[in-house]
Length: 350
Image (cartoon, rainbow, N blue to C red; front, side):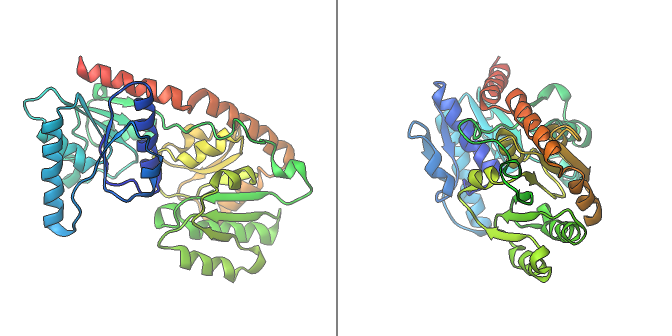
């Protein structure tokens, strides 16, 4: 299994979880990624670890390419499970004349530029983390449908041993709306700030929080502080995300693009109503009007605020939260994911 790094992130969490699950089921798993990432601490001892040489610039990239070629040729694995386009392409070239098959796991939607169509997604088989990603691979990049399998993202059951009753149903309080995401252009924190400001100015009132760090954190905090008490609070990086979700009545995203965000799956496992844009795999988690609400990816803050306002009745929140938990149990468990990945491996090795 190969990726760039194990820094904190959704893709990296999938890599660690899948490596752990495959190892637990008896597979001999080697995980190759840069040293030093925070998620290495979660990799079981039974998983072999390999680290490419460090170094920046073109010389550093060339050293890593040669290192990966040697790793694949010396190790002779049955399958290279690659989680980045670049490493998948190198792994496929390295295995020339060998039995090794390259399974490329695609975690997001990407624009199909003319200069990216040819080298991108050339694994022997492609695993799409959502139906939206699978559609992109076939329609936009022209990959054969028979070489693409959708394996939905999954998360451990963080809600199994937790209180799943919504806080607004346990006490007389305003609903809490939580975003867990990088504070980056992709996640559009300024749209969230503006939507919360509009909602709190016109009612109903909410308490809004954003957990995560990123290059727009200072700008987002300044915009929120300009709204005074009506603005959301940006908490920065947190390690108690499950606790924050358990204290929320709605878990939201305002992203401009997504694959299948793990934060929505974790919130569903906790029985939380969801608010998300209709982009990527988000509508595969959030069924509009059932376990949450969705809005157009280009919606302005007023539309986002109005959509959130429509779901804030306590009885509706309770019903949506219960539906989220059911949707998690039916579609997004880790047991289902690892079995689906094993079936892909068996198929490419036939």
